[in-house]
Length: 204
Image (cartoon, rainbow, N blue to C red; front, side, top):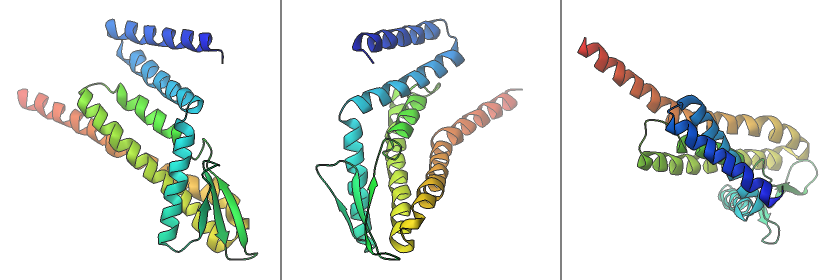
């Protein structure tokens, strides 16, 4: 995308968000602000060192965690996100896993940040705290997803890679992300609503 076009889209997004907020049109404001920020973070992340850094951090974390459970792996400084896993069942040998944008956690982190950054009714400090907690939990969940794939590949063979990556790994990560959203957004919101209902009932 041309820089001038990207700048124009960002300016149009920011102007629309400010316009909706000034006119207190809250639902379009929140949706546009959250979705727009998520896309902006993904765009910036992929165009800068953020995505390669995430790939490196994820592969390094999985590499260290694998060592704790005695699963041999190797990483490469020259290839961010490249992780070699030693397969011991079936035909013994090394298999390479590549941490791409899908498994780096960038997409999920950007969406979570967008939703929390403009969440109504919370102070800026509370939003920042929940964003930090959410990003940390998302990173950990992503490492667990990849560890699931590594263990399946190591112990059950290369033929399990497709099932482990496409089904098992995604199911584990999806369940973890749902739990993160529930604890960070849904549960506090329900508590706030219940407190307001209780105050209204007591006031009657």
